[in-house]
Length: 298
Image (cartoon, rainbow, N blue to C red; front, top):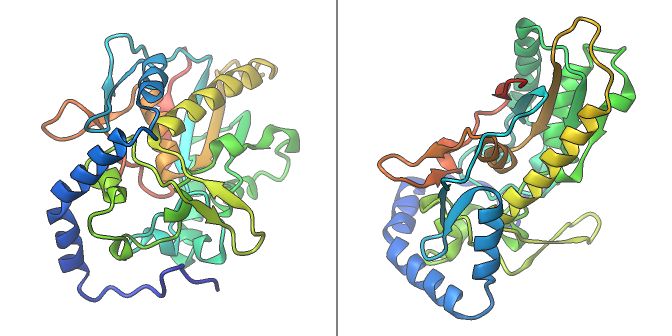
């Protein structure tokens, strides 16, 4: 099995290491301010991108919040989301697990069972989807296939794999352990400060193919996800009405950050405790392999 780029997972002294990283947040914020001042960050462009989504972006802190102009989307279908089951990357020590599909990013034994458990939950809910959208990354696609395996007659042309449903691209932070990143790196503001602007300037290089993947920030993930939602609406509009008269149902199998973006865009974003801005990482993400209804049909 492929290993993480900074070595095997070792949890010794992990609490102390995380505490040291958190204590260095003022240094990380100074580096972030310098990065913004470098002239290499399209601050105005990110503000416009957020504003077009009904969100307010405070570039100085990197935080996002709902603007007065935000309205919950009115969709003619039920929208469900299911994050993938657990992988080694979801267990401590934490890893930046984004647009990566190495063997170490596959569902582990726990995750494989969670995929079956998620299928049990969907069956118990009586969900009969008209369309299933899969991320191209195996950990999410395999979680969805556990459900689809129970529906051998499900039309293959109603199972769509979309790049736009993939996880956030972390660039050369991808598959790096949080504990091994420089203590004063701005990468830590992503989860410590719910910073939607920070991103890597380096490329992730897939060890199998040699393909490179640039990083993106959470504002860009939101923009990408909004485009996916528009495409999804057009696709569902083209499906025939259900014979049982019920609203059409869609389920997307995806990821933590991709799911957080869709949660924000559907009005399900969560405010950080005691703050006015939104959280999208850590305790604010969806749990593994748990179907969540994001939107009721209008």
